[in-house]
Length: 425
Image 1 (cartoon, helix red, strand yellow):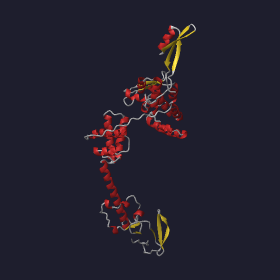
Image 2 (cartoon, rainbow, N blue to C red):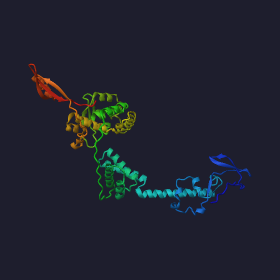
Image 3 (cartoon, helix red, strand yellow):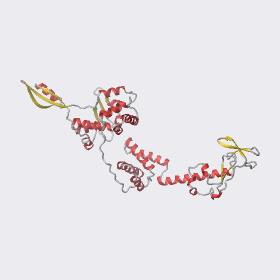
């Protein structure tokens, strides 16, 4: 490889001095004619490589892509010449323009390969995803379902799946490193997308999610999280704890749903097809809500679910670090609902009451909480006695049940009992 030395463009002398920099480029001065010139531009002599502008981009070596100009000059003969900026018609400028054409052609060929894999460009996919969202909206799907399915569709597109080829989509989903429940959701999303595009599907795989028992935190752990929360997140978490509602249901609460006189919160915007319900709450929660700013129709304002969830994750991470308790990181906003259901069943042993408070339409969804909390503690009761018929009648009207008679001296006492009412602290 012949490497030409640096020469003066006026007299051709090779005895040069470095004379500072000009526009971040090295400037030289000739010792013979004292001519100053810029020598940082590089001439690429690519004639020895038999490469011309008519060559296709696929013939360009891989080392050309993502490299700087100086790195590209290593395998080629080079020499410093005049400033390309002032001599655009020079051979140096032609060489650099040739390299730009090579790189542009290589990038376009890579984009064509990506287009063949995905069958849609990024802009076309965004348009299709927007049309798919409107299609789901017209078919009566809720906003949460639309957001989930468009996210699943974007997941398939980013995995380089050809959305017009069902066999390719099934292969991509089968090779994904995720749970069977996630694969089932991806299949369900693609079935809806195929209906939108009117693509005929022959047979789609069936993935069954493995049922797992949810994590149940202790009441002290929930109280720690509520205590560490700010003035806006604290009433939100306390509402989750006392009502057992989902985070989206609490975020959709309106001020007209809160009855401060009767201490009742009504869940009207139930999610996942649940039944609406009314739940009695404590004075502690009502005091928190009275202090909350009432500048919006919604109790916690617009986009409350997203904002509260972000703040909750930040507080949870900070509390887990301070307490060095790994269990805290397992607590989610839905864990408040699981805890509420377990404690309600533990204190009442009434599965139908738990079903009603959670808003479940099917008892099978509620039966999971029966086996979550195995306790050996005794049930708590409130006991009272009566000696007259009037006292016994009042106790029976209040829900007390008769237990036994006890005679002390000449007086006979009727003993009644009633299970102690449970309410979150």
